[in-house]
Image 1: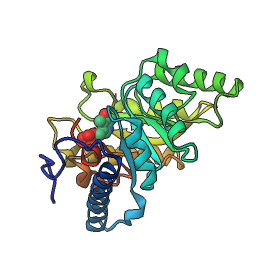
Image 2 (image 1 turned 90 degrees about the vertical axis):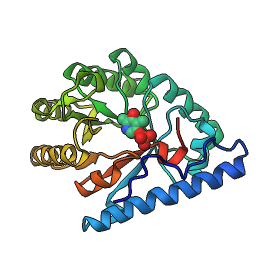
Image 3 (image 1 turned 135 degrees about the vertical axis):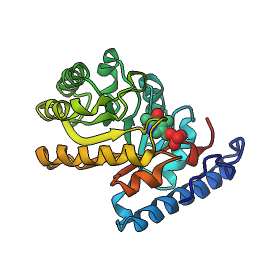
Image 4 (image 1 turned 120 degrees about the vertical axis):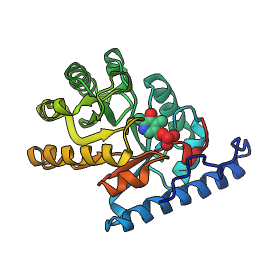
Length: 254
Ligand SMILES: *Cc1c(COP(=O)(O)O)cnc(C)c1O
């Protein structure tokens, strides 16, 4: 397994020339796709089963525009305000693109009402109170004609239950998934996880993969398992990830 922990093949600073930046992103995207495909084949999986969410936090909308030119259709942000601004800017830069925007970071409940105006998915739902806030915000936004369709929700699992990193403890996840599934304006997509620093990623992803199977047994349509980032995507794909969330390996060091 090749995990480029130092990412030494990445340019130290992104190019400010759009043509050069596009070429940088194209190379990085090809490398990430190759890593995902190799990991999928090694696990006996079809590479087409693993989606790619480009995590664009801290990077400009111009980079998102270039990534849409290269065929990417899903982007992740960890802050509501930054995401809202970038989504609006991208709509100016690439009116035809219409990508899907995901929130992948910790979300305060008072941001729910703004978020449902522009985001398609929240991958980091970890409490009943947040579920209720999103349901009520999505209902209001639909009523007001500010969004179409339900908000896609993933329940974030914290394997080590460290409260500072976000995510619900394993034991609470089935009940949270049930709660999301019971909301008229939310759609339960599945689970998300970030491997904890002090647990081997293989072990963390194996735990979440078992949990995802339990959740799927109760909610057969909840097939998404968002797991794996720049440093550990191979281990996640080996354990059934259906979506890797990649920032650094695509865009460079933040
Ligand atoms: C930043 C972030 C990523 C991407 O991490 P990289 O290591 O830069 O690929 C993925 N998931 C979440 C939740 C993040 O906050």
